[in-house]
Amino acid sequence: MQLSRDRSASQALESDRAFRYHGPMMTRYDKLSCDEIRGTIRLLHTRISERFPESGLANVCRSLMDVASETASIIHAIEKPLYFWRIGIALLVLAVVSITVISMTSIHVQSEAMSLSDLVQMAEAAISGLLVIGAGLLSLFSVEIRKKRNRVIAAVNRLRCLAHIIDAHQLTKDPYGTVSIGQRTPHSPARNLTPFELGRYLDYCSEMLSLTSKLAFLYIQNFPDPMANEAVNDLENLITGLSRNIWQKLVILEMQSRPA
Image (cartoon, rainbow, N blue to C red; front, side):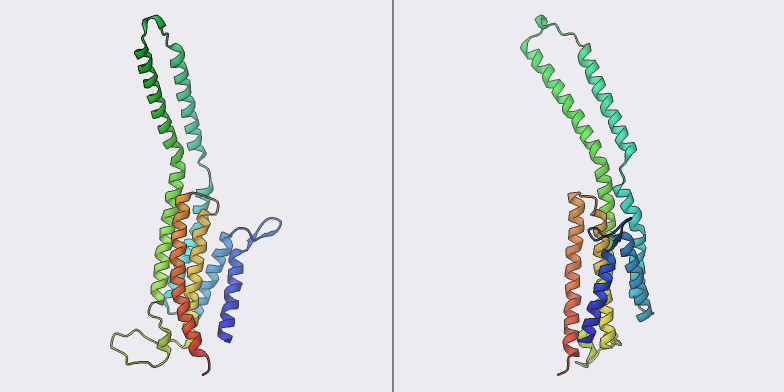
């Protein structure tokens, strides 16, 4: 039971660090801080390296730390408006409107020489042209959103890959392997961790998955795009399922550590 209490206290402390944001005048708890999450991942990497110096889990955490280091620049690029692109679109719209107005004012129509069918054809041609121009301008307006959305989805897919790698590291960590049950085969995975070490290893995997989810949310924290939000939600659902498997192992490990 003491192991469980220590583990819960440690995770609560690190979760508090991840959610903390130091503003210019006060501490805010309504936004995730990229710097605090990066610092938490750095501390987690140090803890894993000290506890399991020869484990590949530390290298995975280092990769997560590298992603966290790049997150700030990606978020800045996503939240920064593309002013040159917007100015270019505004100038294009102004040019199209000016050309349209000049064209309309330069046409001299003699109503006596035109029939009703001619007027209908002119109206249809004008409407078709305006629709084509409007569709083109709308596509140009959405280029900025689509560019930022693709960047978010690419970053989320990178985190999705890391989540699967973290899960792969805990797959062979069997809580029943801490006791002698059955006969080992030549290809059985190594079971050289004590119950305490196994618990810490699974805790580290759970914390890394949680921090991966926090990094993903940073991309959409100030970018309310539906498709980008859907990509992050899918990653969070994946991480929830992977974390559930880890906590099932922790529950089994806790039950085995209780005195009979």
